[in-house]
Image 1: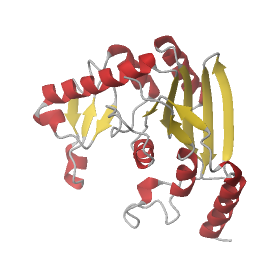
Image 2 (image 1 turned 90 degrees about the horizontal axis):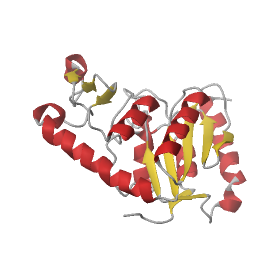
Image 3 (image 1 turned 180 degrees about the vertical axis):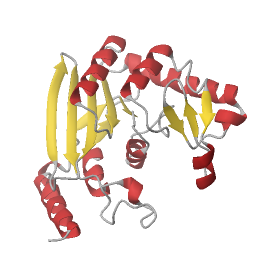
Length: 239
């Protein structure tokens, strides 16, 4: 049986197993934020109407959760303060690639990183301040990512967020595993007010992951992503 047939079979079984719950959302939060490691989580939050405010990290790539912790603690004060331009990637792409040398974050969608750095940094700090006000008042917070780091990395992130925010925090991670043909679900209580949830599956577009052949490859396994994200809702908006 080829990959497409295997994929279609387990997707069909996955959808059938969740059909009874389809009319009811499984998870409700005051705010849901993407924390990388690239923009795929942000795309699905936006697609499903869950992104109601801009996040400075939405379109950034290849950064660690330790960098997120640092930026949240410091109010993004040193975000792209020191940067270099990747000239080779910029020449090969339709975008300008910039690298935050302190926080190890890549940007390819903001030309004003270089052309108007002061305004860019102020804009991103203002975005965080708006988000932070919501987080400080939220009863239920969700962070979502697509990362393959060790589970201890996520646990440390939740412990640090616990110290900053009083609301209950859930971290949902999508883990890419090219060796399996099903969907694995994992949940662990990390503290009295934080939980880690992981979905592990082959996060590959049904038409392949080669962007030179399939321009939609960066969506990943959109059927599984949609089935997961459509279970999330915003229960209230905090100001």
